[in-house]
Length: 588
Image 1 (cartoon, rainbow, N blue to C red):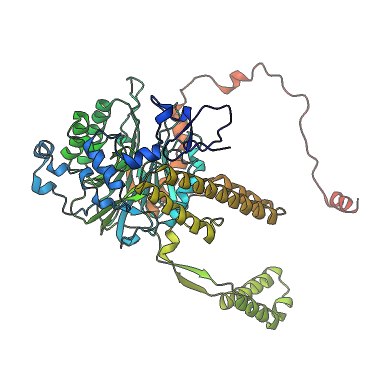
Image 2 (image 1 turned 60 degrees about the vertical axis):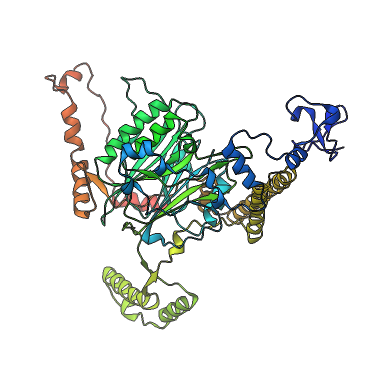
């Protein structure tokens, strides 16, 4: 029994099949489209070998696929599909001077492999953003976490589009060392936008910048999901971060109008700004599409330029630039690029801005006690050798307890002294999951090589090899994860607290958030502890008076409501407890 080379399913004896006259491979007839001559039919692989680009009509796509037909995947040679809006005179001339808009601060955008992101940057000296289209975070969560843990850098912000979160589900989605802010798509599946902010950064939500301002008095066109936050920075300007997902086949004119309103507000605040997202507008077609021109003009009019200039969604028949990061930062050196990954059909994109003087709130060192076996043994010996007679001979219980605690504290501090510990920067990175073994990491690297091979030579044989290996690897990772948690639950089956901790981790429930450093007191952000404490005191002490002000005045006395209630005949009375009752209870 043969398998179909298209769907990889068995071809049963009563099924209509096709046989290639050149390589004798088999296909289901339903898997092949178009008018077919059964006697002289040629399969996809043979057609691609003899006439590799016969299906391509666009010249740029023809050059792109011609490049793909080579043995290597050197993406920096995709010059024919590079966005260069700075040569687009109609936009630039109307927006700003060419010499000012020329992006000397931006290095060329190149392609990088996810585990080879060899960029010499430091987390504490740079501001960085990673954007990826997740196409259901729940579905691709394992692959996304493996991708993030393989990266050599810790990103300040991770932006995600097409999260497919539900309104009651976003608090269950957690990434280590990050705080989540998300906006799901209302009343529909798919869509959604989210921002993961590193927990060392202080920020506040900016709902006034949302592209869609929901107002019951007007009809709102839900063309997109957007979320904006402002990162507080005491060293320099605050940074506004936005993430936008524009749904496919929605009204572009309405989207551009709302985007222009948002950019007007940002421009008036004189702050650094980065807006990432999947806009579902192919910027490579800006010369042929007026709506895309208006989209770019919106950003150019507000002194913002795109950091990604190469295709971010590449298939066997198309290459489009749908994802991007726009910024108004001109005076810093910026490194941007595209990660080649098979998580979804959109490649992740990133940017690093050098020396932006951002204040990270993690401490360079921490203090703690060292409970080594040597210290514990020393503490035990000191307890045994200490003379406790002065404690035992003390007649006052309170004084004896005080002497005991004082002596014990001295011994404890001597054996377990508080020492400063340097915090390793790698502790800010997303760790590998414990079920991802070294062997599995090797298999993931092998899968990535097969993916690159398929992209460089997209034949049916390479696709089949990739799909089979990827499916096997996915099953292996799932079984490894299942075995890990089964063993963990088995070890902690008598510890209810640890069991629930394991279950919460398995369900991805959000960990307890750290106490924020910045509070909004009467509309003014502050980090002063005294002002924060006074603000809490004022809030709680004024709850009663504020509620009382909202109660309408009345001239009716409370006695009016008691007139029709009869007086109680019997009252509740408790007999006082005496010494004899306590003694009788002890001997009973």
